[in-house]
Amino acid sequence: MNSGKTIFAQLMNFVPAYEFRKCVRSYNGNYKVQSFSCWDQFLTMAFAQLTYRENLRDIEACLRMASAKLYHMGIRSQVSRNTLAHANQVRDWRIYADFAQVLIGTARHLYRDEDFGVELNQTVYALDATTIDLCLSLFPWAHFRRHKAAVKLHTLLDLRGSISTVVIITAGKTHEVNVLDQLIFEPGAIYVMDRGYLDFSRLYRIHQSAAFFVTRARKRLDCRRHASRAVDKATGVQSDQVVTLNNFYPKQGYPERLRRIRYYDTTNRKYLVFLSNNFLLPAQTIADLYRCRWQVELFFRWIKQHLRINAFYGTTENAVKTQIWIAISVYVLVAIIKKQLHLDRSLHSILQILSLSLLEKTPILQALSAIDAHEFDKEICNQLNLFN
Image 1 (cartoon, rainbow, N blue to C red):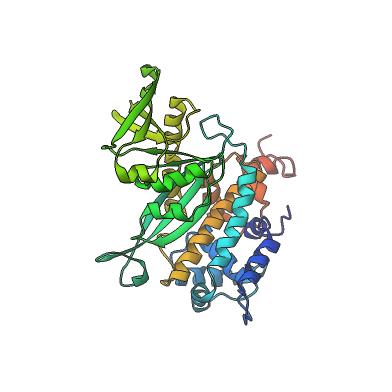
Image 2 (cartoon, rainbow, N blue to C red):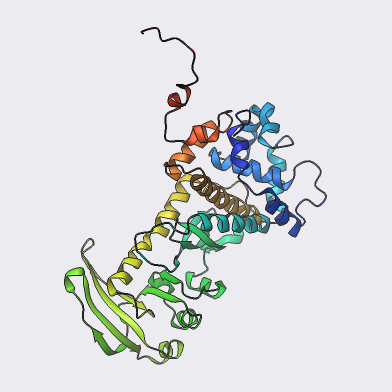
């Protein structure tokens, strides 16, 4: 790695520039743009994400201070808050959404053999949503409640590597279950959801797609038992049954048989009832898969804490979606670098190091390696030791 480049420039070398230009051309992102291109916009927003800038004025002040290094960072023009605000407002957010999908495809390939706690050959996805609160007077398009605005981040997370494969951004009042209508289900894959997604007609569409689902049943599930399997109650599994639905409308939505598993969670001391269309996996594995669903909760918590998606740099829908998609791109890019450089550090640790060293001209592998910096210099240092 060229030690003459800043760490930020070395980081951006991992970005597939050709794919980015394809995304820009798809939406004419640089049409009539003279000085501040989509690439400059992406680099500026990525820098803001990695250094935890609070607002547009903060971004401008920081980059003006480092104006002598902008060219070496890849940014070809001076950055002003008005220029960045205008770019976020008018340039199509789908440019960055499509580019994020390119990075997600690369990351999924790198993490395809990652262990997530359950030994399965199938791909396992966790589906959930989180709400990002906004001010109603500033974001009237994101109406949520009477005096509150919000957007919802619906995420389909590949549990191998915790990579978000599908991200859908909606207004806060959109119910989670409606997102199932927008998904294309992968045959043979397993989709793990909480009971907020319990809609039998939509679950039947998953079944018809030759995919599997694991979800929780509501407390008052009216069903008829057809068969029971032997279970070892010492493992926590209390019953494993084959059932059909009794009520008219649920039965119309899902006319075939379901698997109903009753499980006792010793940690939280409560009973859980799972529904699935998978009759081959052991009941304990079904329970373990649902436990792994908490990885998507950890993912939401992680990105809210470490990426700038709570304080937005613009108030329009386009600006908000642009910032969220670039934040996701930064997260996935760091995950790609962690795998390609074979780093032992956590993503949190890598982001903390990057936030303080982006403008330094140190080889990125040296900066991010778990080995202390003085161990790199030990072999090339010619300074005599005073105490020898």
